[in-house]
Length: 249
Length: 192
Image 1: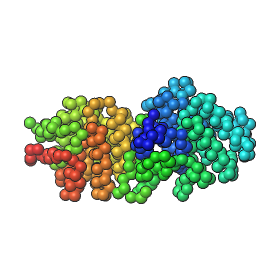
Image 2: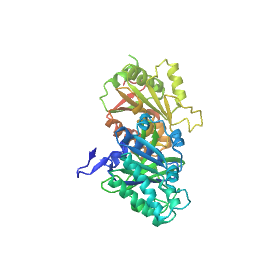
Image 3: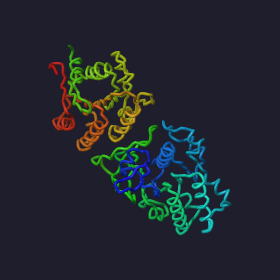
Image 4: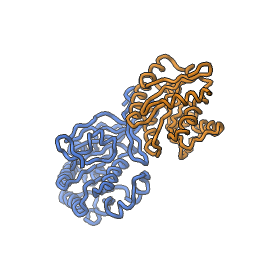
């Protein structure tokens, strides 16, 4: 457990460069929006956050909304530090949200406000039962399409974030935005409600395509707001500063 | 004592976490590689990350093989094969960067290889600043060198920056000198 100079408890992501950018890690119990267009590395970074947590003994849960967890695992980077025992020991739990929808009787195309509450309760029951300290929802955008209205999306995020914070769980909500999008989320409410926003992007420079990461906001800590170039590798996410003399971006 | 041996002997004096500018005459290029990879690094059991922007990984390994130099502890970051549209089959000893303009990716691939390598003592050889200067402006190259060398120093890794004298402008030379602690000059007609 890491604390900053003001005593705020930190959740080290385990990604050294990101922890350096955040001066020690994500303030514990915060809910972070990890946003970006496709192919920017959001799922890999989120999964690595959980893996490091599980290795450190924090129960971690990945809620997959669109992709079956089996397929997710088949395509995951073969991390040097990935150990299947983390899953058999329930340190790392993968949940397919469609299965949860089915269990809760939420198979319809659009959920009512009451059903939003039911969905939050369903997730929170798992968090409490499994003593989850790190959670990833991939993606909040896909859930948003089932909730339809901004009101219901706001209600879902507020209730979930409150429940997770009370449970001492640090969470990442993955958000998908289209390339060139001006905002940080599809429904616009996600970015306003999150405690922090980490933006991942593909940046084209003179015909080269670079993966970048930038922390836009992070309540409860000072942080770098510079843009970094990243690489997804077997030893995890690596980052270096974007060279300023390198042109656009 | 050959010139290559003399260069290797000077490298022996290199303190930990330092950066050295290795300026070689064009006719000494292959001997310089021998001096660094074989006589210096191999004998001292140093793991080398060889960043090549001049000739491809395949060509370099062919040269090392022809010179009967053991390259088992040399890992390559090849930033030229993709640009040349030549074969870039992944091997256990090489990582490819799509273009020498992707300087951040050179840093990232080097970092990855340094993390993966098990050796106690590590060194990065940048071959060459002249080749990188063809593809990058002096501004961005200067920024790259500063960040790259500082980062390697902080990891206790030595850096060797190779330049070919005949192709090096004063401005480029000044840029390299700014980040290096010392310079080794080697060409056939003069003793380093």
